[in-house]
Structure formats: C-alpha cells, structure tokens
Length: 89
Image (cartoon, rainbow, N blue to C red; front, side, top):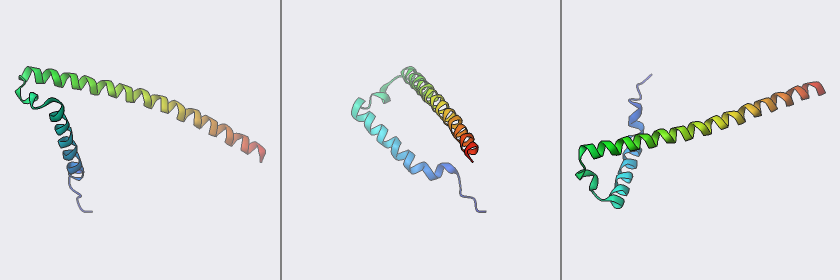
C-alpha cells in the first residue's frame, strides 16, 4: 500500500483559502488594527475567542444530546413495530 502522505495536505488549499477569506473580512471590518495591538491585548482577544469556541461546543453538544434522544426514541418505535409485525405472522 502506498503512503498517501499527511492527511492535512489534502485539505491545506481549502483551509488556507478559508483563512485568507477570513483575514480579508477582518481587514475590511477592522483594518490593520490587530498588528498594532500589544501582546497583552492579543492574548485577551485569544482568550475571548477560546471562550466563544467553548461555548459553541456546548451548544453543539446539547444539540447532539437532543438528537441522540430522538434516535433512541425511534429505535424503540422500530423495535415495537418489528415485534407487532412478528405477532401478525
């Protein structure tokens, strides 16, 4: 089997294009301010972003939990229908 190479290389172009798009959007909205910020201000910004990502993770986790509940309910329904079908045979 041949080595396909590092997985990240397959998506690098798409990822770098997404970064460029995000940087352009930030430049249009905020200009070049970030490059003039103090390291402390940049750390504060990063901390806020990490909190945002964590919060989005909680939202996603909560939605997955709800989906799992629906899936479990559907499994129970399918099992009940299969039992009913077996009784009709």
